[in-house]
Length: 240
Image (cartoon, rainbow, N blue to C red; front, side):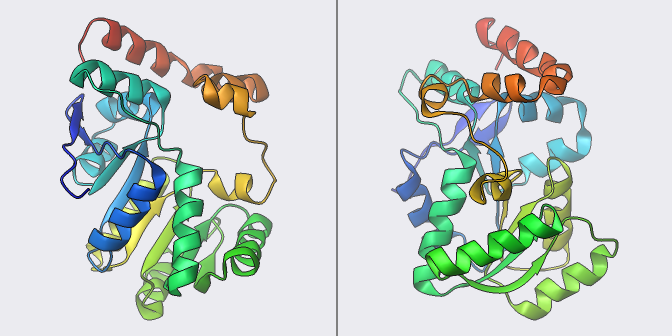
């Protein structure tokens, strides 16, 4: 399954993983010890990248862009005439943590609040036996010190929950520092994993309406939803 043909959406190369198990398998086989980075892609991030040169550059230089948003999946399927599948970032991360626990790979956990960060580490160790050799909540002041700690730790996998595009920018700084770990930006995944944030009910996920549930739960997100409208207009005009 290492011959997956990437799909171009607005100039970005999306890897069309058929399922999460395959994604985890290929990450462990092909992307360790190389300083590679995986980024979840949704319509909002694509539109944001069109107006943000830093994020645009990072996405173009990422090793894995995977379809986390249903809008991306629809666009990929429309462009190729083939059914593609969504890879939810929180599920991919948890499956990857499960496998790293079995393999005892050293993991560094970064981001979220101090309490959620500690809860995440505790649960990863107790549920999956993850070998966590370093952790840091998201409210740090000295980025250089944290990068040095990651270097010294010799972590194989570093997951970063700082929100986008802050987490992608931080990961890029780590790669520029020569760190060869596999990096994954995970947004609000730790909060979901620890039960501090409710994930959309299964019916919303099945219908591809997680974005709607998040909007209902956080009405303030409405100001960000204009990017979804822009993406939809590009989609129906075949401009993606």
